[in-house]
Image (cartoon, rainbow, N blue to C red; front, side, top):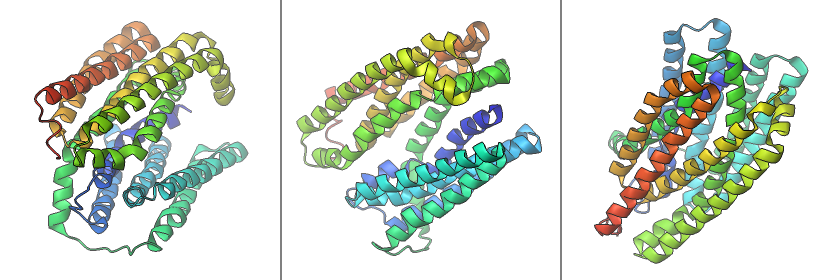
Length: 374
């Protein structure tokens, strides 16, 4: 469990090399600055780079073979999601969000189902991860590649000028998201560095439900990306902000419900799933969900800034909050253990949310925010 936990944490960081935050840019590329082939070729290169970086990190840390193999397999499994993302983005852009949703759902259900089935039968994490990777590859071929071929051809053509343009345009978004990933991982890394592996496992388990709110945020904002882009293009700013306000209000409600659920049944459910006693962490779990609400709000506002192509605000927000996470995570964890780790996470995401809100307000007052993409 401990090895899988740190492997998942690292994979969640490295996956953004493969993602490179191209999806949001590709979906909101209303002027068709680049073709699918351009995005696809960049994606292939980025996936290769992700695995090279993952291997380099493992070698640098001098992990033993078992730990290195587990981390490599988790990274490879996550890379498949990064590669599938370019197809799902094109489905979304072409008005077939249903295909993107089905792809993600089917691939996840199949690979995760096979992973748990093998793990239960063999009790061997490495064999289970191999099964997840193989089933993930097969699912990707069936759900993304073959489906896309019924709509368009997949070409392997290197347009260096266009690819360079994508790397350049998406780089600020990538840096921002990579810093955000570090921000979300900083408290877990601090626990791994400061406390024993047992507590790393506890904290990883308690942190898992936090992503549920972010998942809801994605469900709410992603279907609205194209309408929001059209609102901005047509200077329908009232409709634009009404949609964003509605999403933020819904996220607030979801956060409250999740906090209540975490307090009442979260610990018993998690204890059954992982097979360890977590009763003493009921308050900590509820607090992490509360912090996750701020993270989901920042996630939504990030999409707003992406649609506006306001790269400076994105870099500024993620940069400052990541530095804060770096500075406070270990000291707070060392002093207050898991509670300190949770506080460091909460402080970081609250700062990120506040910075995004302030930048949006300032830009609106300057009246430049609504005119950049008009």
